[in-house]
Length: 111
Length: 111
View 1: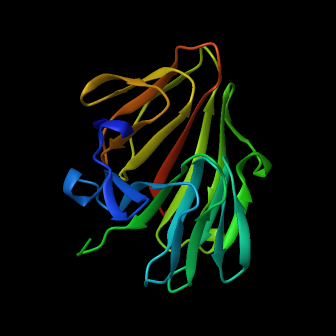
View 2: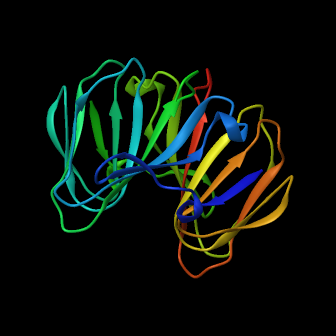
C-alpha cells in the first residue's frame, strides 16, 4: 500500500497557469493506470488536443467547461467525465477559484 | 464524451451502510478502467478482503482508516492510496459523516 497527501505531490507546470500532480503512476508500482490531479488557474485555457488514450475525470473544485466531441459541458464538483481515445478536447476555467480535477489515464511508456 | 453528475448515478448496496456508484465503466465505453464512488456510513466497517487487481483511491469526504499490508493509514480528503493486486485491505469510517472516496480499478470481465 502506498499513501500520499495530494498537496505534498509536486505541482509540475504544463504551461503558465496549468499544473499537474502525478499522484499515482507506474513509477509507484501502479500496474495499469495513473491518477493525476490537474489544476487550472482562473481564466486559463487548456487548448484543444487529442491523444490515443482515454481520460476518466472527476471534478473536485472550481467551475469551468470541457469542450469535446459532444460540445461544451459544464465542469463542477461531483461531475464525472469520460473522454474517449482520439477525441479532441480542451478545458477552460470560468470561475474565480482554481479548477481542480482528477484525470486518470492508462499507463504510457512515455509521460 | 460522456458526462455524469455523480449524485445522479444509482447508489448500489454492497452491504448495510456501504454503497457504490459506478461512475464510469466498460458498459459506458471506458476502454481500460472503471471509476467508482464508494460511500461508507459512520461506524461501518468494510471487512478485510483481497482480489487480483489494484485500487487507486482518492478520498473526497469524511474520516476513516484503511488497513492494508503497510498497516493502518488515515483516510481524509486529499489522500491518494494505491492498494496493490492481492493485497489484503479493509476500511473503517471513524468520523461523523459518510466516508466517500473514488476507487479506480482495471476493467473486469465480471463485476
